[in-house]
Length: 145
Image (tube, rainbow, N blue to C red; front, side, top):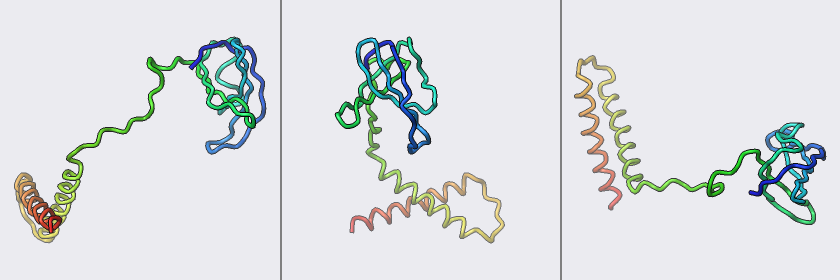
């Protein structure tokens, strides 16, 4: 992004965008650059005399020069493009185990739905985990067929 001082701002109308009304302004800088920038408000967040940072987003004959203007400096190294998180190599295994645990819990609960019992919570969890392991073993065996 380039840093410059705003010399003039001229409103050029508004238009309906995806996120509401947008207002277009022609902005000139002290370095000789002139182009259009959009704002979500009728008054842009910058004024004549402000030192701002701008970037030319596009420059073509038909639509003219489109600018992105910011009052704050970009972070050191510039703006970073989105980088997806690294994939967990155990993601599939964790998903299968989660599915097996859920099915085991539902199965265990259905078997005891109409019974009154006073089992400690730890016993119930151990039973569900044991059943989930059986489901996981059966699932893995089935996938290898």
